[in-house]
Image 1 (cartoon, helix red, strand yellow):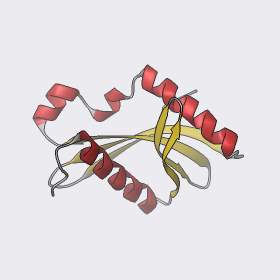
Image 2: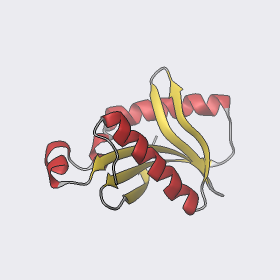
Image 3: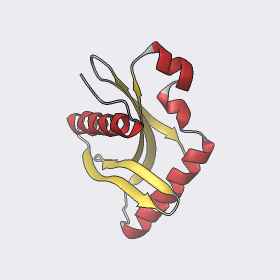
Length: 125
């Protein structure tokens, strides 16, 4: 399967795969690529219990990529988390909800087969 070599193309392919993965598991996609002054949330989804703010991190599935860049979820450091939390607060100001919130990370490995690793409750407020 071809995904392109640019980080934008890899990111777009990963987000598409993550959304498909979530839908298969009963999540409703509320919003994609929600922007605030401090950042972006890739996917906002909900299930019967949670409103979930999801950061998608994608890598081409090769040993060289892991040596150079580490595992995708490692890129969601404290600084990135702070921006996601701020952006989630902006979303909630516009679209209040009674649902509990959760912050997830989805790792997408793009190769011959697409592999998805969903890390629920990856970080907290």
